[in-house]
Length: 193
Ligand SMILES: [Ca+2]
Ligand SMILES: [Ca+2]
Ligand SMILES: [Ca+2]
Figure (cartoon, protein in one colour):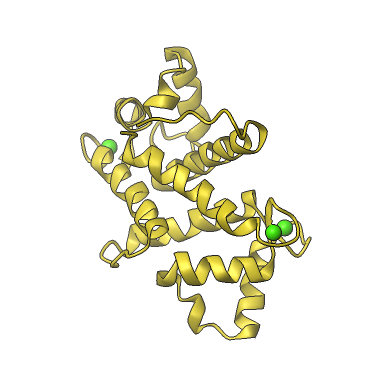
C-alpha cells in the first residue's frame, strides 16, 4: 500500500492524462479537455457555474505560454493554487478523488508542521519526518546531504522553515518528476500492491 501523499501525487498525474489524451496534443489539455476535467474532477472549484467568458478568462490565466493549451506544468501550478485555497477553507466537503488528493496534501502538511516551533511551518526535523514517512519512495533514494540541499532549496525566504507555499511548490515539482517518468518510461512504472 503506497502512502496517501504518494497516491495523491500519482492521482494528480493520472487525472491529467485521463483528459489530455482525448484530442489534439496527447500531453496537453485543450479548452474542452480542461473544462471536462474541472467539471468532473473538481466540482468544488465551481467551473460549471462559469459562463463562457469567465471560463475563457480562466483558461487564459492558466495558459502561461499562450499556446491555447494547458500543459502539465500549467495544470500543476493551477492545482497548487487551489490547494493553497483549501488550506484556508479546511472544511469543504471533498467528494471527488482529485479533491481528496488535494485535501491529503493539506492534511499531511498540518500533521507534521504542528510538532514543534511554528505550528504553520515545517522546520528541518519536521520536513525530514514528513519525507521519510509520507514519501518513502522519494526519500529512500535521498542521502542526508541531499535532504539538506533540498531543505535550503525549498526555503525560498530563508527563514530555515518550510511554509505551506514552499511545501506545495515542492510537491508540484515532485508531480512534474512523476509526470516525466510517466512520459519517458510508460512501461516501467513501479507498481506496488
Ligand atoms: Ca489534448
Ligand atoms: Ca500553455
Ligand atoms: Ca513547526
